[in-house]
Image (cartoon, rainbow, N blue to C red; front, top):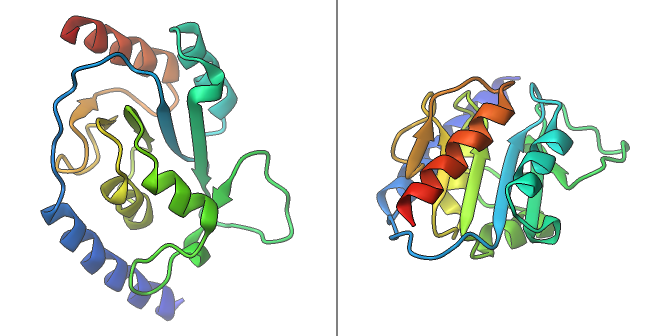
Length: 170
């Protein structure tokens, strides 16, 4: 348990270094690809969230999702790529191929679907090469370009507000 606190400290240090290099890109084109980073520790409606995105005109093949769980079980089979604390080392480096691929993908939009500041999730968001990042207002304002003020369980309102803002920008 004590080692988890030390590991968390070093990951926070890595996160602070990554936050210094975050650059905000200008949103100019239509959304084609979406990266979805979900904290499934508390939120169990990922499929419904994806359906809402599809209902708003996003091709389901263009949505890539990774899920985080506080208690990750190695032997359990998850329906989507799932990671936990074990997949990030003490230096804040990712040790899983699917997570590295997710970070290196140039998504048009990254949705950071978590409302509690968890260092590992914030690190993934900060390292992501997505052009535009959206999240909740309860998370650090330096991470996301847009913040939507709603609850985690109210995913329909989140998606509605997201696409309402996107349409106003065009």
